Image (cartoon, rainbow, N blue to C red):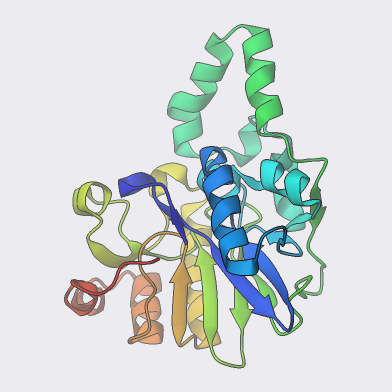
Length: 260
C-alpha cells in the first residue's frame, strides 16, 4: 500500500506467513485511520497483523506505528541501533542534514511545552522492541532482517531468500528523491536514499552493495514502484556510482502500473 502522495508518498507492506500477517512500515501519523481501514478490509473486520516491523524510524515510515500498535495491541520491532530514536526526541549524534538545517532549529524555537507535546506524539517507547540479534524476524520465520545502516543508524531491509523478495525501506528506492524530476514528478529511477534525510551517506552506499550481494529478484522499496527486472546489476551500478546502467530503469518502469 502507498500512503501520502507526490514526493511525500511512502510504501508499506502486508506480508503473510501461514495464517498470520505482519506489517512492514506503516506510513505517516495522519495515515493511521486509512491504513487501519485498508488492513481490516484485507484481513477482515476486527482482524489485525501480529506485529509491525519498521525498516527505520522516520515519520513517513513509522509515524502511524504508535497509534496502530496501541489500537491493535501488537508490538513494533526495530533494529537495536534504532531504539534511541523511539522516544521522538532530536538526538544530535543520529541527526541528518534536514534535522540540522531546519527541524532542530524549529523545535528549539518553540516553547518548552509545545516541544514536549511534539516529542510525546512521536514517542513509541511503550510499544517498541528490538529485533533479535540473530537476524530472525518475529512472525515471519522465512524472512531475515538485514542491517543496512546509512539512511539511519539502525536501518534494516527484510529479505526472503526462498524467492528473492527484498523489502528495502529507504536503503534503496526506485524514485530519485535527490533529483528535481524525482521530487516533483516521481520519475522512476533506482537511487539511494535522499541525502538530506540520510545520517551517513558512505554507509548507505555500502548497504546498497550488501543488498546486491544477496541476489534479489524483486525489490520492494519504501518509495517508488517495485522493481523486478535487472535488480542485481542495477544495485551494483548504484553502489559503484555508475549512472549509465541505471538510466534504462526509466524506460522499463515508465507507464507501468503504480504501487497499490
